[in-house]
Length: 273
Image 1 (tube, rainbow, N blue to C red):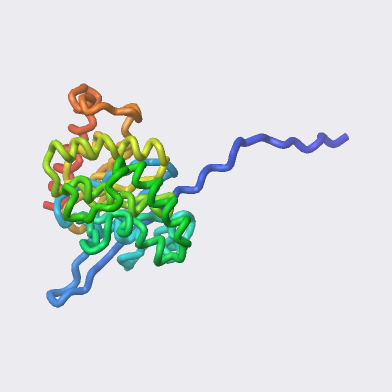
Image 2: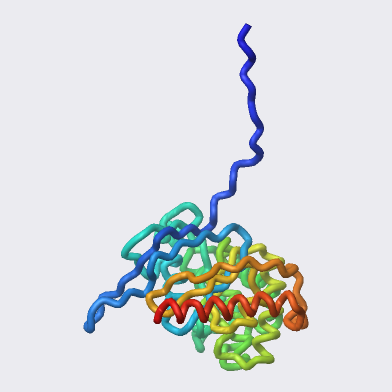
């Protein structure tokens, strides 16, 4: 008698990466000739991760973020965002983007600046007001909605910019060195607030920075990149707890990760030489 068929339980299906890049290249054509910004970049980012990109100026950190956002087109390899092409992800409003400068319109109030993408997307006024109120609470700017950008500090303006990116509730938040122009005290405060915001929203975050302490403090994964053409020299998975007071930066665990980041940056320069 033949044995009955056996069904083997293999558990839940593996989760699809939110962002998956494979052998990605990007070459810019300029008046002085071709410039290779990215070379053979492969990376996966899973749902809910906080991933920082760090490397020297011109290494392709921002270029890679812009490829994810369909603001630049790769010339080789492949990339998907939520299982779609970057263009499809943009059309489906899969991400919010925070630039280096807050980019707020000075003639619009803070709440009107935040509501702008919602207006463009066709949300009705009641839904706009609801979402603006919610994101102002998320970034601790309650009571400032009627102010104009010039009435707020630089740090508050950048929080308003983050609120604008959160207003349409995309799953992915892309942040291109949003705190780079701020002084260290304000930057530390915003780093703390960003971690709390990430914990509350569970967004997947891609974050460009030049600061080793900032990258280590914020991230679950740190991607170290080499000088142009941008390559990934190391991907560091952080085992720091998700709740991180600022003084965690003085612990041996934090310093060990920071040391590995520095070694990755040095290795990138050696490879370039």
